[in-house]
Image (cartoon, rainbow, N blue to C red; front, side, top):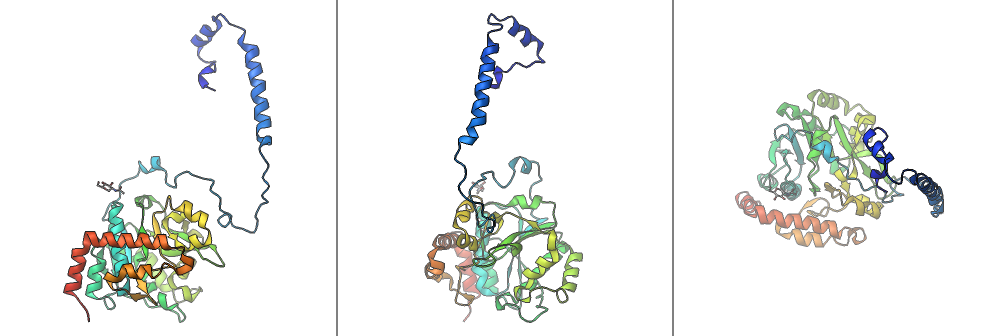
Length: 366
Ligand SMILES: *[C@@H]1O[C@H](CO)[C@@H](O)[C@H](O)[C@H]1NC(C)=O
């Protein structure tokens, strides 16, 4: 029904014109009949739809009970058109390198940031005593700028062996010393699928994405520390350093557990699109299928395409073979994501292969 058919009562001219029409009164019974008919349709319509036979699922979270209901994009384009552009001096994307084995991960991540035309500056935090010149050269071949930091040792016994250097991540909060206003931190086992410049327009001091586990506890309230948004503050950094050894939290999970306790109820929860953790695919495949439409950052938590064994280095030219060797992991459900990474690596070599070959020539190790 067209709204032009309605008579605007405030428009005297149209009222006059209507009154002067030849079928002056004949529309009234027609309108009443239409109104009754429409009301009948309106009242009977919904009750005719089949009532839901599905019982509510009180024991499931909305995510384990996932249904495709909403299709609105997660970012409001009209709002974004009012925000200032990203400034590569003040807004940074930061990653870290604590062991040589992750260098190809950083290189591929940098390539995917180039591909989505990311306009933020880039920093690679690394531990100079642990990282070879060769690995640093490879890791910085696609746009990250090396920034040496001091290792922050774990304040407790019992930290998971993979997380022993992870307290160094807290250095992020001290980067106001470089005039960084806001930053997005990404673990080196992430790949970027879409531009996420919108994050830099957030007013909050801290935001992250809730963590997901394949088994119990599944979807959780606590956040995963593989992707963080934060506004650095040396004051906050000093407060953290003063508290890591005295606060009460799970030592095994290192900085992630500490940060969850530090921010408590104040962390802003970001959509899973900003940390599309592979665990989601295993936990709830339907949710993963929908997430792929919006995912900005994919986090390779359950398979690491560029590692072998217990976080060991893979020879750069053996990467494809290493990836194919992982096709069967987790019942084979990550073949597509492994192939995505393999493709990013192939492109990295296409665009930056000469620089990477130079890194290998200049700094070859035994
Ligand atoms: C990135 O910029 C280039 C050059 O302006 C353009 O051709 C390309 O489509 C852009 N890519 C994306 C993902 O926006």
